[in-house]
Amino acid sequence: MRAPILRTLFTLALLVHTPCAAQDPGNPLAEQVERLVRSGEARVVAWRRDIHENPELGNREFRTAALVAEHLRSLGIEVRTEVAHTGVVGVLRGGRPGPTVALRADMDALPVAEMVDLPFASKVRTLYNGIEVGVMHACGHDNHVAILMGVAEVLAGVREQIPGNVLFVFQPAEEGPPEGEDGGASMMLREGVFDPMPSAIFGLHVWPSPVGQLTYRAGGAMAGADGLYIKVVGRQTHGALPWGGVDPIVVASQIVMGLQTITSRQTDVTKAPAIVTVGSIHGGLRGNIIPDSVVMVGTVRSLDPDMRTDIHERIRRTAEGIAASAGAEAVVRIGLGAAVTYNDPDLTRWALPTLRRAAGEDLVREGVPITGAEDFSAYQEVVPGLFFFLGGLPEGEDPATAPANHSPLFHVDEGALPVGVRALSSLALDYLFDQARGISQDH
Image 1 (cartoon, rainbow, N blue to C red):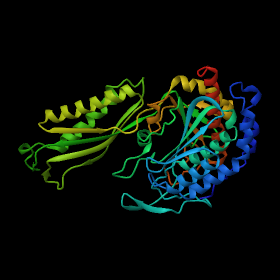
Image 2: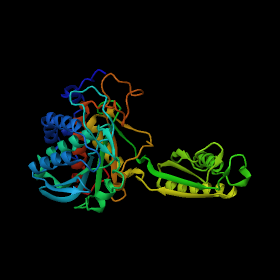
Image 3: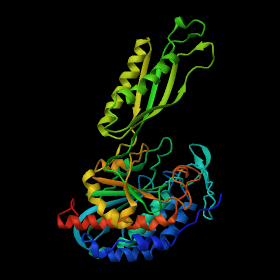
C-alpha cells in the first residue's frame, strides 16, 4: 500500500493551535515550553521511528528500556531500571518544593506482522509463547514512548522553576505478559513505582481520529476486562440414549443464552454499557457420544466498578442455577483483569483548559465509552488519574474505515507527536503550579 504522508514539521498546526502564553495564567513557563516542544520535535520523530523499527514484546523491552534510561540520565533525571522486569522510572526534581505528578507511557509491542509500507517498518520476528511471530507496534506504543521522552526533555529544560517533582513511568507489558509471567502496571505498583508518591497521574493513547485531536471522558472511559471460564459437568452417555446421562452441551447452550439476559434484562444500561461474551466452547469428540463436560471461555466488559461486581455475581448465579436445573454442575471462574479506566471527574474538569490550550479549542472533544481495556486503570485505583486519546489518523484516510489499533495496517501520522508532548508537559506543569497555589481544582 502507498505510505501515508508523514507530516514531521507540523508547521501549519502549530500556527493555528499553538497555545498563547499570555492567556495562560496557570503556567508561567508556557512560552519556554513551546520553544522546547518545537526544538525537540525532530528528535521525538527520530525516537519514534527507531522504536517502531525495533519493537519488543511485553517483558522483553530491553532495547527500548535502555534507550529510555540513557536519555533520562543524559537529562540529569534520577533513574531506576528493571522495575517489573524492564520498566524504567525517572524522577525529575524541580528547583522549588512541591508535590509530585506522574506521567506514564507503555513500551510493549504486539505479536503482529507489520503490513504498512514504511521505510522504518518492522521486520522483527521472535518467539511468543513458543510460536514464531512477527512483532509490530500495532497499538502505537512507540509513539507513547517517544512523546514521553520528549516531555522529559522539555521539563528538564525548565526544572529549576518547577514547584515539585515529575515521575516518569515507562511501563512494560501493558498488552499483557507472556504465559506464566507477571507484569504490567500492577507489578510496577507492587515494586514501588510510586516513589515519591504522586498526587495525580496522566497518560495518553494514540487513536485513529483527526491528527492532534484530544478526546477525553470523565468517569468510566474504558472498560474493565475480566476473563470468564465456565466448566459444565454432566454425565457421559450414548448419543442415542440422552436420558441415560446429563448432556452438558445442551446445558452450556442454555447458559450462553442465559448470560445474554444479564446485560439485556438485568443491568441498568442507562448507567453504563456492559458486555458478556462467550468466545470459545469446547466439548465432545464424536457425534454419537454425549460428553462428560463442556468448557466455555469468554470476556466480561464493564464501565462502572459497582456494576462490574454485580455482573460477576449474576454470571455465577445464572450459570450455576441453569446447570443445577438440569442435574449438571457449573464451575465458574472469573479472572480479574484490568479494572475500569476511571477518569477522576474533578481532575478531568480541571484538565480541560490545559488540553484546549495544548491542541486548540476545536480539537478537544468529549468521547464515548470504549469497551477496550487499559491497565493504566491500576494506577487510577491508587491516585486520581486522567487517560485521554490523541488523534493520529493518516492524511486521506476515513476514520470509519481506517485500520484500528492492533491491525497490521495501523499507522499514526507523526503530526500528532508534538501535540502529545505539549499536552503532557502542560498538564504536569499546570498541575504543579496550581497545587503550589492551592487551587488544584479550579483553573
